[in-house]
Image (cartoon, rainbow, N blue to C red):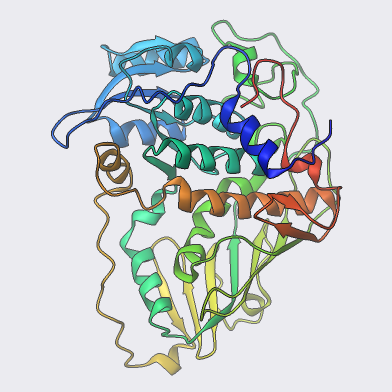
Length: 429
């Protein structure tokens, strides 16, 4: 397959075509809903992260539930007995009464479900990292813009008060201009190849539908329902899982968008499974008066030298902004200016970023004609692209020069195969 594509071809193939069962029309089936009306929602995926998303939207009308596991589907329907159940989201989208869709599937089926919903005119909430491949992220981002639909990516921490206070400190230059950021996470998703055992597919599990666009392989309980993130065909390891949550903070605070270069280091690349540790260096250009930024990601026990040297508290996960006047360390719920002695008596700026009405509620309000959600695809798309490019750099073994406008690596063809995968027949977006 020739993976090098022009932007014109890229947009034509992603926005005008789809494989198999669904033909895109973009006719806008979603009706206009007032703030006092309830949305008719279809939900794709019912357990793990999907449970939290269902709980976040449960005050609307959940009229359709979709899962590839009959037992899981029955358990979800017991909570929403009026909802119709489906094992194939494409059949669910044939309904004409759906206003919006929540996608909480494994990463490898994010894009096919999201794109089909967008093309059918439905608003979409999709879990991070928005898609499995960089190409897919760009495609759904462009589709959301084209069809003018309300979207939100599942970066729930973005709605918290702590993230807002960190952004205010950075914007008001409490530590001066920032040109260096370190992001680390203690979670590990890694593997050592395919499972040796291939037991029969459990009754009620629609394995072919679970695979979706991914290459066919025998069923294993190692994949479903929890550990799929360890395999490249289905997930993106620790970076794919947690990158959008932690990198979100510097993206927001520093107004980052597309990196210009990405370089990664880790253990020897395995063709099947994700690495036990990873370090990724991103270079972002200057943005107006804001200086260029070097952002480094670490996972699997790797941490910045500043942490090793005890200049920074040894938190299990964190985001460290390094400015000309000091440092700011943060995680989901904490923030600390460093060195602490230099900030004795410091008065933070008065809060000015409004509190969120709730991460899911932002999207629901946007679906009903309100302001765009803060993590809509226009923001979340560039964030997810940057995160996924770290895995592309690692797997290709090259320092990548990224041409964001063309959605391509400009200095090597080695990375093309990791930007856009081969899809099984009937599953292309």
